[in-house]
Image 1 (cartoon, rainbow, N blue to C red):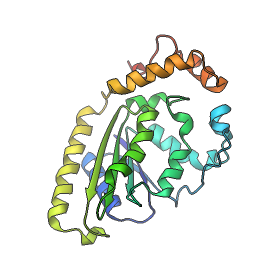
Image 2 (image 1 turned 135 degrees about the vertical axis):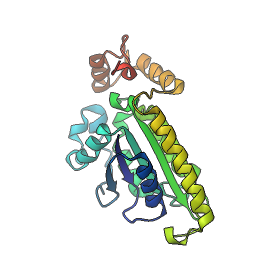
Image 3 (image 1 turned 180 degrees about the vertical axis):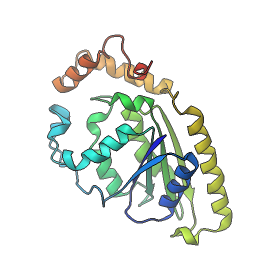
Length: 232
């Protein structure tokens, strides 16, 4: 099992330790990136990725190693501490660069066979909205199965978390790891994902964006082919 983690911060705090705990239970091959250390560019809104090609993004080469790691992974983990009730700016900036991969544009078919986990922590609240920031992109990429875990750690460092809360984290990560292993190699998109994909399929039959239309027609998704049947 190959796992790629995108950390929404460059320090190793509570969110990092929970993601690490989960990966240890999955016992897979882990590749991890820290933001903004490993990617710190803001989307400039040039629209090249939408209208022409993602390869024309001014940050394409800088981002490519992370993109390839996600495409190669069986499991993607997006981990972010809560910053003012949302994901970190570094995480948001990173996800902004993949708008072209949303199902309304040119989704990567490998995503329809992947599992993903959103992990967030806070001393108080905001985990739900932070996880949604990350889940939105995962869903619209077509990710087959998405798990969410938000932990109210009541502390500002991993060492400051009391043992009772750490025990809860231990049990929750064990449960998520078990589900991921159970679905490994046979995961398929939810009905919600398939319905949304088919809505976009109808849109792409008469698409205004040539780059998107050409992509969908080349994949034959406007006909009978579907990305989740790629391995069948």
